[in-house]
Amino acid sequence: MVGFSGHRVVSRPEALALVIRGIFGELAQSGRIRLSAISSIATGGDTIFAREALAAGMPWLLFMPRPWQDYQRDFPPEQRAEVESMIGRAALTENAVDPQGEPYTYLECGIRTADEADVIIAFWDGLPAAGIGGTADVVDYCRKLGKPLILIDAHTLAVTRKNLGRVRSHVDKSAAAAGLSLEEQFEICDRQATREGPLARQLTGFVILLHLLAVSLAIGVIVFVAKEHRTITLGVGIIKMLILGLVLWLAFHLRRRHHRWLESRSAAEMLRSVLAYRTLPGALGVLRRLAIPDADELRRSIQMQLAVEKREANAKVPTLEEFRERYLVERISDQKKYYASCLRRALPFLRWLQSGFWTASVAAFFFSLIYIFHLRIYPNLNESVVRETLKTLSLILPLAGAACLSLIATHDLSRRVARYRQMVDLLDRAAVKIHAARSWHGMEDAVAETEEQLLFEIKEWHSLTRFASEAQ
Image (tube, rainbow, N blue to C red; front, top):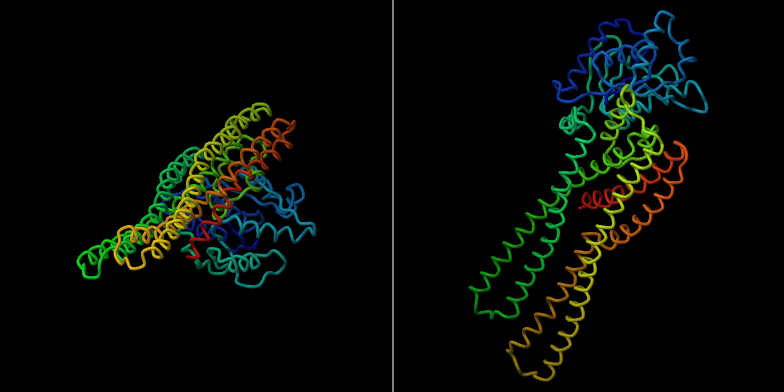
């Protein structure tokens, strides 16, 4: 999404329009992605930017410092008809609100433009702002955020680029979704998450089991193989090193898989959520209340697509009852079945691992006790298969118990089981609230609360897993 901030006085409007047009072409990367525009509207730079964006077929998100009936006095009479027509063509129009009024509403428009945009084009003379909310304030805010900036010199029209590398990464990720519907984007993300997720979990368990195998081999060599059998010791040592090498390779591969899984699952859940309430009259308001970390780019893309859909003449608006029935069946019931299914799978696995931990721990205690009694009863018996077996089991079984706890922790099973139970209960209560809604406002509040609960799991899981992996 391309934002703009610029001065009202433009000495060469045609030349500025040409420069902006060239920047659009550069950012579009030869048509690989579809750009969106976001800005306020004022005489001069803002109007030229909006005109070029609309001419290029870009959806335009407009922030208005005041309602048009009050704001039109800022434009010369001969320009008001054109600007009013442009405002009518905006995909989405929002009015900035600040209790202190002007000029703080101008600053609010600039700040919100910078927050929503992936890159800001600034038509700036390089001087401090003449008043609150000027272009210099927006440029300073973007610089502090590290926001990608394209500066157009107000005198020479020379272009300077800052932090454009971040825009390149956005372009690379957005290119695959260019021109796709929300349903198609969801199918792609969900398919990738479904493919990556099980493998990532399996690799985690495999790494733990391989560690256990490598340590068990080392203990077995120490206990059973005599020192003079160097060939056997060396062979087992090589096998252990190969296993540990495989563990390291799998751990590296796991981190890459985990990152892809994290991104695709977060995106899929946000898209699944939007598809459930997209026909709600206040869908855009619900979307702004919900956010997943590191998914701002996707949220902005969805916001523009929803805005365009709402403006289409053939967009069908369901009745309240039609929306209620569809949401209860396709969202509430579907998610309740999903969480109930997850609970049925996770609970036996958790109980099995807990049983494994207690069994291994208790068995290790008794084998250690028997080994001590064996030493007391037969103190002069140097070599005995029974004694060495008892010693080995007393060393390996605690490791097996620790492996069970590691699997519980890495799969987050205890929390997930509790969360699955909680979600089933929350969805039952959400269904009651959806049934009780008798107006669109009430329905929007109930849907927003439900979606917030459904996305909370992915937010919490995203934060825990992402920052844990970054700390390693």
